[in-house]
Image 1 (cartoon, rainbow, N blue to C red):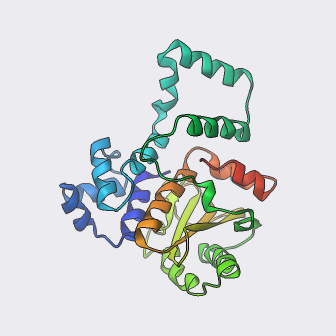
Image 2 (cartoon, one colour; image 1 turned 45 degrees about the vertical axis):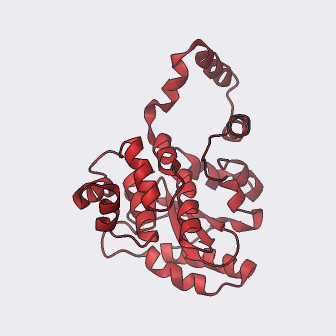
Image 3 (cartoon, rainbow, N blue to C red; image 1 turned 90 degrees about the vertical axis):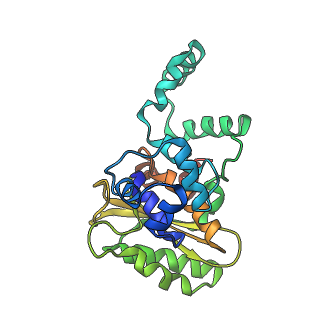
Length: 261
């Protein structure tokens, strides 16, 4: 995941300008621009919480995203004997991605984080995971997602809303956040829900980290806050090798089992 590209997507989805966000956070517009373009490292936890508040996101939503990017996160286990023992037990069993997801789900249920946003998996149904799609453009992938949204909810305006998110005057499309993932959003009544399009072949489009797009997710929700919150959660799909694992899943149910809680 490219944090700066994710921040840009969240900011533009909220309708806020670089200057507007900078003013609310108490930094310069140039600083926000540098972060969004990857020239500066992600902000400190306190500043991330301020940015989240300005964008109408849960307090720790952005710190969770940044934690996904930190290479030292796994090293934390090595700081205690119990942590080293746990890491050894997991390694000894050579657990696969689905099994590790079950372990992570147990940890989340037994030791919940206060203020944490809801589960990613709850945004999807098996019918909302479309596998092995062959398209030649990002717009085509968004159209496939929009058709599935319309089939389920009869919301024909969604396709039109997604059009500008598939294009950019130069560089990566505004929906491309790295890790092989593009995120689109549209407004619709009802609870927030999402459609995932897993591509048979990577798309030849510019991305902020150079990783070809192979997964397109469209989130629909009733208002800006719900959409922004959902996008922040879905951005976690761009971490590690999750997109590749989702594309390799043998079924929609298997793909859903890989999603973080």
